[in-house]
Length: 155
Image 1 (cartoon, rainbow, N blue to C red):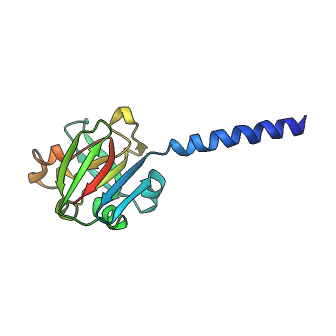
Image 2 (cartoon, one colour):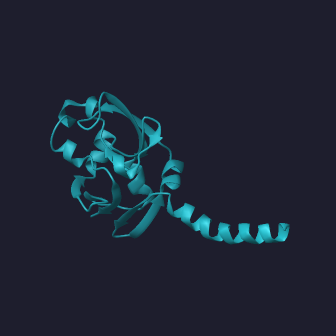
């Protein structure tokens, strides 16, 4: 009986482990140096920073945690003046990469301490510290805060 249970467990584990691995969201960064994909665990290992800000899409001040966009591009060896951020629904917006150092823009992986589900602006959200600078409170910066990010192309 133990042998049968062990065999069943081994067979199930062979199918479940890859399925669980696929559940970890990822983002692909493409540039002239190639493409690299980082999953959420790898992003978190880079070190998260916090932005506490109000947004047009949330009530009150929200705490976003994520990887500084400048660091993310550095890790991906992606250089260029413009980052085209692409969402899961293929919405895209061009962001000057200078924003990333100038304003401390992040790729948020958490909102108020929790991962963001796809149906609630996740898994990744380009976030600006809107409350830190009056220039950020409106367009074009609100339009550059892309949620459901799946890819970033740097040129």
